[in-house]
Structure formats: structure tokens, C-alpha cells
Amino acid sequence: MFSSSSIEVFDKNQLSGTTTWLSPSNIALIKYWGKKNLQVPINPSLSFTLKECLTETTVSYKPSLEGFKYEFYFENKLKPSFNNKLDVFFKRIIQYLPFLNQVSLKISSNNTFPHSSGIASSASAFSALSLCLVDIEKSLVENTDFYKKSSFIARLGSGSACRSIYGSASFWGKSTLVDNSKDDYAIAFDLPKFFNDYNDTILIIDEKSKSISSSVGHNLVKDHHFKSSRINQANKNLENLLHAIQNQNSNEFISVVENEALTLHAMMLSSNPSFILLKPNTINIINKIWTFRKENNTSLCFTLDAGANIHLLYHQNDFVSVQKFVKSELVDYCSNGKYINDKVGPGPIKK
Image (cartoon, helix red, strand yellow):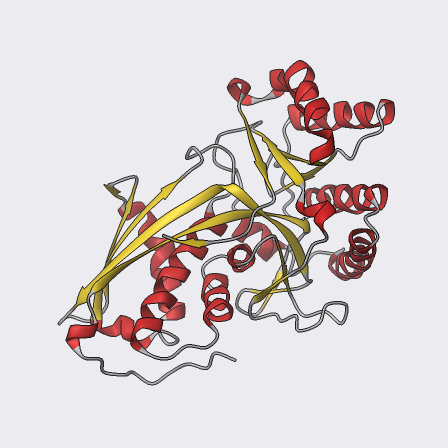
């Protein structure tokens, strides 16, 4: 849809300004694990968009006589250590945003959640940056597909980032089960009010960098002996989850979401070479959750990203009881007692 463009020449007076966007992280219910081609998922994914865990990015731009240049600042400090990943991103997108050939950028980024808190920030970071870049393009040329293109650009930085462009939920990947779904960008997914009232309490089990990056993990799926079975399972789980959401069936929702979380880590365990991102306290908390749910009539369930930290998903009606459970039984398993209370949110905001 967004074919590469020939280099355009813009008036220098247009190539100066500033834009700021806040964009959220998201948590996948149906997991995306494994790629085909460039940043294309082997199976569709569905995610909740968070409200409080945001990246705020400001991009200032001015004319450049030396072609495209940029500097990246995180928390007001120049961070050249991020440049390797950003270099790859800009190399992928410059053909779709030709104005970049004529500008110098200053990119300043901050998170509302603590850095190294265990929340993957690539989704919020690349979506915020992409919204800024497409916003600049919008000031130069007519763009009728702002959010679609922002999602498309974000995907080329981090696959999951394309889902952060929309709230309160987002769908990415071509599927006959969801109208207008695409591999190239995510689309907004309408949630009934029941699921719009869901909370996500993030338990920080491990604050250290992962032993294996997600990019490495995705690549290991290419030759995984369970690859075909995983694709079939993901699509069946998607069908069941859509049914659960439509019918506001908490039990079916719990079954699918937890199965997806554990399957994600089962794929890691059974990769060649195999790797383990779970920690002992991750397992301890999962067992505590299962006991709590068995003894209480509750919507509480868990999901996991590609790491040790646990996301507790539950309806607002259960907020008081789950918070009591976290404080009395789970906080001791968290790194320095850290956890973050978040909820389903509306999506990015232009500042």
C-alpha cells in the first residue's frame, strides 16, 4: 500500500519545526512470535493498548545540506548506543518518507515508566517516533492515511510497535476472521465495554536485560520443528478469543490468554538452541494465581511477554481483591517489590 517514493525536493522554509507525540506500550493476548520476510508476522496478533506506560517523543527538524542526519537523546542525554537500531530503522523507512533526505533531526525521548523496569519499551518508542515522522510528512504533503502509515512505519522498527498506534485494542496480521486486517500495518480493534474496563498490573520479576533478544528469538522460529503447529494453534486461539470477547466470556478469555503466554515460552524452550527467559519467581507467581482463581470467583489471569515479568489482567470489578492479593502474596516475588498498575487505554496522543 505504501510504495516507495522517488526523492522529492521540498522548500527549505517548510523543513523546520517540532512535533511531539505520546504513544503507549501494548500487551499481546494472541502472541506474535516468528517472522516471514521483513517484519511480517507468521501469525496474526491481538493486543490490549495500555494507558499509563507511555513514551513521549519530540522530533525537531531543520534543513540539512549534507543529507539525512539525526541525534537521539533519552532523558535529555545523548545516547549514541541506540544508533545501531535506529540506523537500521531509518534505512528501512527513508524510501517511504523522502523528506528525510533533506533534514537533520533531533529526537528526544522519555518514558513515563522507569527505564529497565522490565516493560518492553520498543513498541511505545518506535510508535511515538513514527507518529512524529509521519506528522512531519503530513505538514509537507497530503496524507489521508495518517494512522495506517504510522503503523506501517512503526512496524519497520519493531513489529509490536505497529499495534501501539491504536487504542483500546489493536489487531495485526492478515486473517479471514478480522475484516480489513493486513500484514503491513495494524488496525484498531473494537472492544466491548466489559473488556475496556480491564486492568493490567505488571509484576517486575527481573529488571535485567534479557539473555536473548526478541529479534534472535524470532529468527529461531524459522527452522523450529513446531512452527506449523504453532501457526495452526495461534489461529485457533484467535478464533476462540474473538468468541470470548464477543460473548464477554471471562473463562474462555482466561483459557486462551494463558495458553498463548505459556506457548510463547514453550517455543523458546524447544528452540534450537533453546533458551529460558522465565525465572523461578515467574513460576511461583503463576502457581499463586492459579490457586487464587480456584478459590475465588475472579476474572484474574496472567500473560507474559518475551521475558520474566508477569502481566495480571482483570476486570475493574475485581480491582480491590486483586490489589489485596498482589500486596499480600505476590509483591515479595517482585524485584525490590516493584509492580506497575496500568489499564486498557485510548491510544496515542499528540501533545
